[in-house]
Picture (cartoon, rainbow, N blue to C red):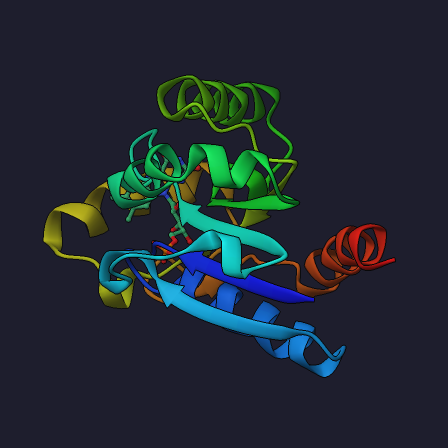
Length: 178
Ligand SMILES: Cc1cc2nc3c(=O)[nH]c(=O)nc-3n(C[C@H](O)[C@H](O)[C@H](O)COP(=O)(O)O)c2cc1C
């Protein structure tokens, strides 16, 4: 299959995830075009058999570049297999309220853009104080201290479950590549 992977990433974890999935899909024999949505320019999705879009949650929203892309390509996306990678720290835990929040973010996004992803994968992201400014470091330290008492707040910590991500991606691609 020929796949388009487009992503938005503020601190870099979604970019890392998108690159990982590209490598995995290429290893499985697929052809992949990877693009940072902020730099992609015009994209003709009809050249592809399927699309994976990824973005991360910051203060309750995905990056606007994802919403803009999804809205502009809603018809093309609706006509092909699609998967949304929703990267957040809420997905790193089991807090019911956090997960309801992710559902709300997703439903706001689908309503605003007119695109409903064929599949959504909620991916745990990373805590990266080394990349935050003073304000973000302050806010994120408090959030992580509450969520993950074992975390060393001075150090970056990745919560992404790569095996689970691989398994979900493999199932999705197998169901469409047949
Ligand atoms: C300023 C800021 C706000 C964030 N807001 C949320 C949030 O509202 N909900 C959430 O689950 N995660 C939130 N996160 C965590 C990010 O989604 C997580 O760090 C993710 O890995 C970032 O991905 P990226 O590096 O691709 O941008 C926030 C992170 C930062 C730095």
